[in-house]
Length: 102
Length: 268
Image (cartoon, rainbow over all chains, first blue to last red):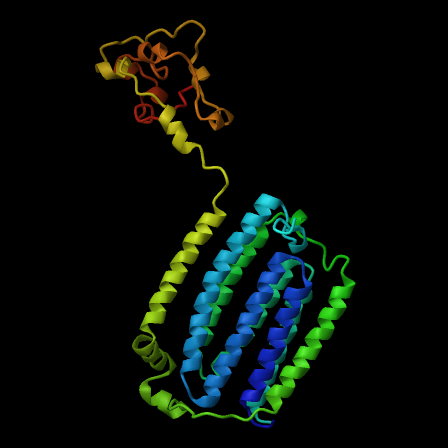
């Protein structure tokens, strides 16, 4: 791996994605879970842009742009939900939010 | 090792370390700051990958907008609501780490043994430079073949904004609207008679101007009874002394008294 190749970027993307996934699976604070989701979205973006770079294509960058736009909308809604949650239930712990289960 | 790989390694290692910092930090603010570091490093990697526009968008949208929102929400959430770090779940932590490492190994094996297939596109570095740059090429791409997705993204962002407004709205509507309804325009008010009554009408017995201050907690029930309806027609809505222009005190002759449509009268 002396030359820069898409393998580098794919490994970075995998590491970031799995870090974010660990955060989603093990943390209980919904804010940190939200940030971990953002991390996973960025890992996917790195993979898209890395493939686009390897293939000399623009489609990957276009997809990454759309992903960023959707992630912005998602973050607005997610933070709104977090605020409503903390205001109504006085908690941001996902283990305490069990209304559908009970 | 070429300098490109060296730069990539620095950026990637910093990104992964701060990504781990996002996950393990106890304080959510520290998580957010670590996330900023990750995003900035990823923006650098995008620039390395000849995606300059995406690098800029990454910084503007993620570190500029989303992370600021996250920090605002962290400030708005009561610190007592925050759960303890991994409280009482060591088993989940250990299993999560094991499964994560397993998955990383699998993905790494898949990545390292993969062979690039498919036709490469036309956009080499020289070709992009001839077309004017990354932004130009991306703009041509977006607005020729992806017009419908752009419109769809616009709708998605609009709906997201409206949804956030609905979600973040307080449970109880502010009582300002209802307060307007309860205010009274009195036809018997001496102001309506163009200053002919030079003396203020007397207040009914037992009523003072301050009794008509409507308290906020009284508004919750919907109907507010301040006094009987006749009192409004006989009585000035607030107590003002009427006299020649020169004898008025500055407080009573200023313009705010005449434009007062709110229910709160002047005291004294």
